[in-house]
Image (cartoon, rainbow, N blue to C red; front, side, top):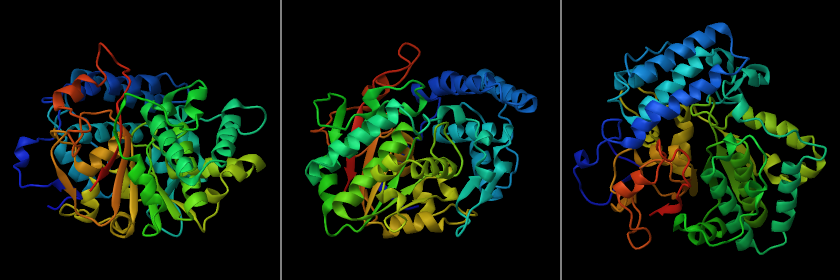
Length: 426
């Protein structure tokens, strides 16, 4: 099957198997530590009902014992074919592909809390769903995505406003570069899960020496954003709160400096804890519009003639982005994502999970040469939170798979400083 990103030369893909807990220490650490910890946080939430608490406890017990995988239940959101596809790939927590068992676990959490039954489609497309009546309480990860109330003397939003006004005074290329780096740093710190305000996450993105930035194609990205050949730009977002606000600031800066149309792509359901969803955006947009100062800071992204937030049910699944163009047998194609990858001029892929869905979550040798098979220019802006990296130039970052694994969270170092890359796939 063709892929959006594939090796430049003919290679035997059996040399690069999918990551599982049997061949990847970080995947095993995620199964044994990170995912049970996520459920523990939900079990401590007093708003979780008795039935949901019982069902979540059983899921946690299954993870800890690494025993029988609880079967998925059909729901009104996903097609039966998608359910069968992932169920067939997750027979065991230990042997299933890493990305598949992560998705499977979060699907079970959303089932346990009844979230699927609170979703309703929006118009004009059935590919976008919101929680009915904006009922954010139906999102089990809502506490990870709460942002400070807009108005009054809140330091966070005041800092956002000040950073925007400072950036607008600078040359166009400087504005764009700072906006890109601000978006990168917010992904690196996983700021959406930090409960206390920290001014460092509202910094302007000004250039500075940072040994953690291993691949830096930001100059190419800025040139591409300003190029007359680029008229449509798409950003595939990752986390809500700090990171998504910085993504909106990036989109705002692109529109203000380059006059380009920008689409941001988000999920319908929070497949990975702090994932930004259509519901999150609608809630934030309403609050921004109610603030004269912030509606001026985000004037362009509040104007539908320049900006839109879009989704597709395929984004909520374990399927790769290549599967959107070339779906597995029985899976319906995703018209919105086919449009994205076939008609966009420049695509910015945010975050670790989206990177893995772009290149496939294999144990790649990071310096293996790859090529893209679509016309759009593709830039990945991410913190390296898994051992999936491919296509980097050895002269830029002479990294090996073993070195990547050593840099990831472990029992000895559960919160490392993540390496970062701004990588163009050519």
